[in-house]
Image 1: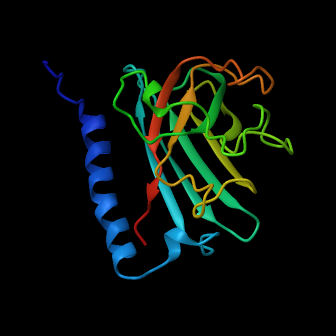
Image 2 (image 1 turned 45 degrees about the vertical axis):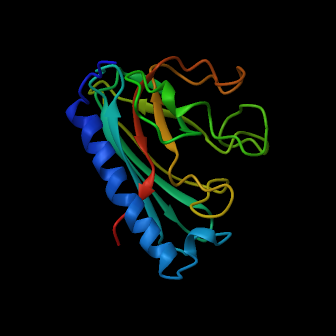
Length: 191
């Protein structure tokens, strides 16, 4: 079977993941229990560097920081078409397919229906929409009480996806947000 070489962004993402896993293992082997804790300590941070899906040209960065109120999400995404774009945490941190479908569906450990980020019952990964201006840049800065950076609902190691279209917040199971224009693996950030 012939394999196509990885693009530079995909190769960099794979390399980052390769470096993150030994660090995680070292913490675990050293007796530190943070990855098994029910809640990450305040200030604990994870990061996802977004790469373009299907050569869309969309890139960016999302940081996730534990606070007393939940996880503080900060995102900067460039190269988008103006308007709203679905923004979700997906089940898997697998960027091996060019269209990013290898990240699976929305992260939904409680088995709820898809909904908006303010709904009491929603996928843990339902983060709503990013809104891009005429310059193609979108930013987000909010705290989400349902996200977790440790424990059984941890998003560390999962994928974060920006979609081509708007999440209508009601259509099942994904909000009809269209293709995946950017994605990244959520990894532990350096201190």
